[in-house]
Length: 279
Image 1 (cartoon, helix red, strand yellow):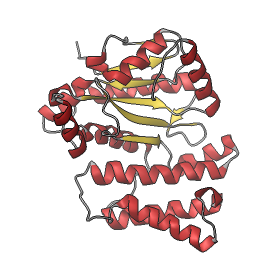
Image 2 (cartoon, rainbow, N blue to C red):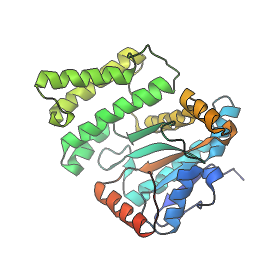
Image 3 (cartoon, one colour):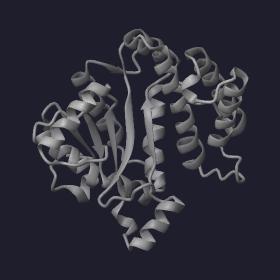
């Protein structure tokens, strides 16, 4: 029987429990427990800490069973959300977050809005009726993904002030200056659309490859970046100071991005149960 590396949660049930922090990490165990308490958390799935251990033990390669288990878990989330990952009409967007058994605030990586591509942008605009919100989400994804996945996780160490995030921020400042505005919120949907294209061009220029326009490639890039951040300089130093063992590894939590209304509903339910969380 194949080893279980992916634990689903959502729809009022979960594969795991709150007692499984060593395997699911703190965040994954808490999400599972909230589901078991019938709190309406956005559905998702957790890649266990054993994946992280196997990843490093095998020279940064995943267990052969992992891809199929991730696809099955993603289908589970799609069914609950009534959306499809990468679909041009009703796209599902997800977050990819770390989750070690003990909190390591600010040490690990996160990628949001995963699944936004040239083909899914219009579907999101049609659904929300808010092109500015969609293009702002897209430019944030490009900035975060290029920094976390394409630069840091790839082991690229640019000179001080020359990192991709800083370069993209310079483009944004230049756009605001050209428009005669001072706040990010003053930029229009058209401004952000133009910036998104400028961002992608700069990413290709500086990092030598294009920002991925494929939802699954973005997802695996985000997963890999979280596992890579476990052995990043900040995380290693934090573990040394806190005397945390490296063999613990981190879990990875993939969770549906949801509306503000859903998020407020969940937060209310958490308060009623006396639960605090940072997700």
